[in-house]
Image (cartoon, rainbow, N blue to C red; front, top):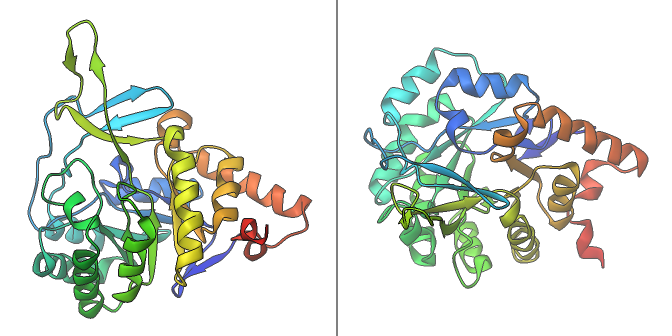
Length: 298
C-alpha cells in the first residue's frame, strides 16, 4: 500500500531519513531503516575531511531547532569505504557538497558505487561559500547538476534552498540540467541570543532553522514546485505528525524526509508516521498515488 518509486528507485514507503546526525555512520543508517524508513540519507559528504563549526552547534528554539554544524564529515573516500562493509537495509541517498563542479563530480564518482542515489546539497545556509551561494543562483545550479548527471549512472536529486525569491526558478534550473528530482526544502537562516550573557548562543552565531516552524514554508514550496516541474519532489521541513506528512503529499511530494522530529519523538517516528498514513489511506479508500498532489484539484 505504501510502496513508492522515485526515478526508478523502489522504496517500501515514502519516508526518508533527512541528511543529518543520524546519517554519520552506516550503522546509524541501518538503525533508522529498521525503524521503518523506506530510504536513508547520509550526512553531507565533501571532497576532504572537515571539522565543522565550534560548539555549541544546536539549540532548541520555539517550534524547532537551530543548528550550525558546518558540514563536519570524514571525507567522501573514508565514508564510502565504510559503506562498502555494510549491507544497508533501505534505499540510500548520498548527500554531497563541494566548492565547484569539478569537486562535485569527483565526490559523486567516489560515492556512486555505494549508494542508490545522490542528493546534491546546494543549499546549506550555514556554510559560507559552499551551499548557499550555489543554490541561490540558477546558472550555478544548472552547471553543477549537469556536471554530476553526466558523471554518474544513478538518480540525482537537487536539494533546494528556500532562501530565494522564487524557488521554482531554482527547481526549473535543476530539471533543465537533468536532475531526476528535487528535495524541498533545506533550513531557513536564524539566530538565538542568550539574554543573560547577551551573546549569540551558537558557536557560529547563526544557523539553520528546522522543525515545525518551517513546515508551512515547506508545504508552499512543494506546492509551487509541483505546479512548475515534471520531475519527482521529495518534501522536507517540519514533518512531525501524520497530518504534516499527508499535507506535504497533498501539496505534491512523492516522498518525504524526516529529520528534526527524531530529536523529539525518537526513531519510532517512522513507524508511527507509516501507520498513520496507512490508516488514512484505508479510511479514505485511496491509494498513495491518488494522494500525491490532490490539493491541486481545488
